Length: 122
View (tube, rainbow, N blue to C red):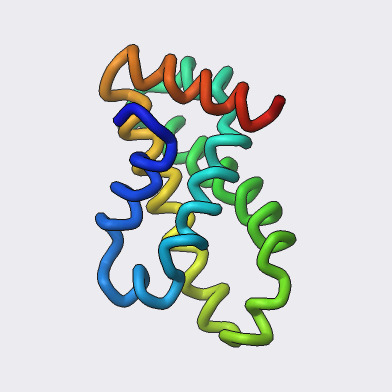
């Protein structure tokens, strides 16, 4: 994947149909953008893929992204009710796990993630 949009699109396509339809492409893309922006790159480099530490990293990273995502979509709770927030947590965890899996696939992916994060935080 050469762009952040491609990464977001691939993650969206990998979601189960019901979750994909309920959240929509744009919300999942926003989730990916926020996750990349808040990626703890310093910690990612110190954990092994599939280890207990990586699970702890995903859980902590998910909480950070959830806070920002909730601020972005504050009105959706009233629109969708509690189902939206119940659905959000596992999808968010899934998105972050997919980003982390992609990060560990190759050195070029690590470099791309650093570049995208730098662009988003600039």
